[in-house]
Image (tube, rainbow, N blue to C red; front, side, top):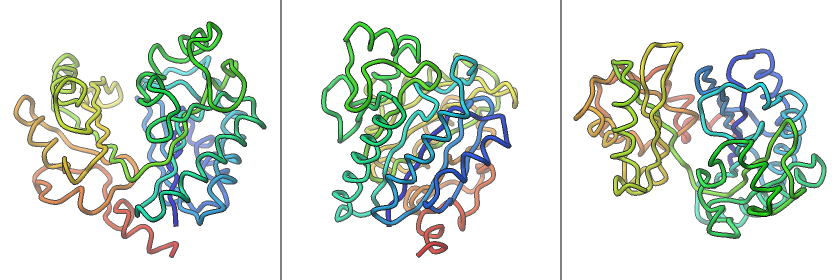
Length: 289
């Protein structure tokens, strides 16, 4: 059993999001996380080897038809309608299967849909495409310029951005934990300072990516994290570090996470919408295995 966690650049149109969730069949939907401020929806799906590439191709086909980036206003960094499409393995023994599905999906999406596909993370073919942030730098317009100038070359698909759907980033990886902490203040500069202090690239926590964002719908500032190794940095550490500088209103898990990520998590910090049965990988997979 493998997971895939496609992220699409739509966070407000509920009907479109529900339709896109169905388009990733035959993969089975475990969770949808939608955020109107981020302008993003994250689908967590499970499928056997041999089904993942088909699911991602179908979802990419529907996403390209449904989302026009030229009118997109979300805050989350992105370069594509289907922005990222990672295939997730839960055991090192399944890494080869996940890589095969990711590479097949990338090749099919590039060929059929005319989308430039970049392999990132452990599948990256150059240092300049290893980190998502390096590919996303400047957003869709800057990516289109860099492609046109020959500064970047996709691994699959045409050497130019799709006019309305941009590009897609594909990898295979173990579980990554996407986790947000809402501050009990709208101080965006404070959120950005905290994010800068904690991100690995500035000498912060190992494997942690972080940005500060304004949440207009809730009148708060947010520190948004990606944790690449939840055993090295459990979520309680992020809460403790943020609480050193700012009051915390609540926290939020985006998608699913391993149970171990919540070891020692403080009971006095609310987790918006969290349900162990739905949001812990070990529990959610019981419904499909």
